[in-house]
Image 1 (cartoon, helix red, strand yellow):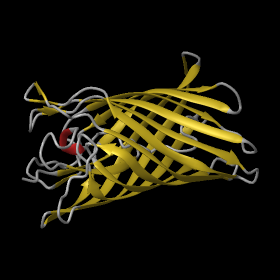
Image 2 (image 1 turned 180 degrees about the horizontal axis):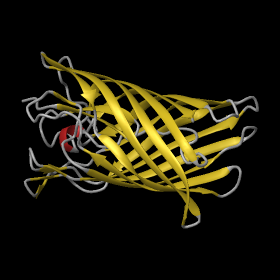
Image 3 (image 1 turned 90 degrees about the horizontal axis):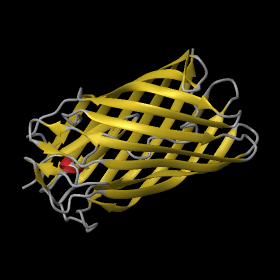
Image 4 (image 1 turned 135 degrees about the horizontal axis):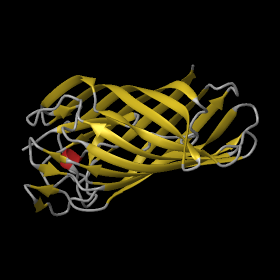
Amino acid sequence: MYKKIQLSFIALATGAICAVTQPALAGEGGGSSYNGGVENFMAGAAPPPGFYVLEYGNVYSADTLKDGSGNTIPVPGFKVSAVAAATRFVWSTNEKMLGGNLVWHAIVPLVDLSVSAAGASQHKTGIGDITFGPAIAFHHSPALHSVLALDFVAPAGEYGKSNLANIGRNYWSLQPLFTMSQIDPNGFNWDFKATLNLAGTNNATNYRSGNELYVDYSAGVGLGNGWTVGVGGYWMQQLNADTSNGVEVPNSLTKAFAIGPSVKYDNGKGWFITAKLQQEMAVAGRTQGTALWIKSTIPF
């Protein structure tokens, strides 16, 4: 009856997703190779030329499961708990392209996932799927920055089609994206990151999740002392139906919205940290839960 719970820590963070019976949940197992809300303040501000390490942390918890119509699915003892840490390596080069500078990055996540449902449980720990790719960074003014990028998600995480919990998706994904940030230490700040998630086929199940559009966002006010306070979250919508063995799966479109308080501290010397607590709502075809996100950078 109960199939599997799949976790994806992609592009900086993690989310855990459960499948009851298809097509009760959309996206294979209700999951995705992109994690909504991973980005926060400074999302579109690539650093100047040099090598950088960014650390991302995420704690996610959910005990509510929604079907494709947004109705709660009663699953006895259902709970997903995930803790993840990801290291992002960024090489910002001096090479010019389309008026910006070329940037390369790679993200290696470590995931700890626990799942329980209907008297069964499973715990997995390990390296998740790895994201890498090129980007072009633009600095339009001292305050306005943007990035155009193409990410590849490699199926490096452990996967088993009979597992209750998976920390890998078992397919490649392609993610073209655009992100922009307005940064004002003494005024209004805003950021968004629009990502089109194009999933490949899971060869173990011959299932292909539909394409998805994610928009991570943040807005806040700089207090003039290094602190920015505001809100952040994400919106997502699946654009086309899943397919199983080449046949379209009915009622398989996911959607979600999340919002919560967000803060940033920037010491003005190349180091900053952001934190956000977001609550998911208006969810269909996946888990509905709460996530804590933390991001920090270490310049070299």
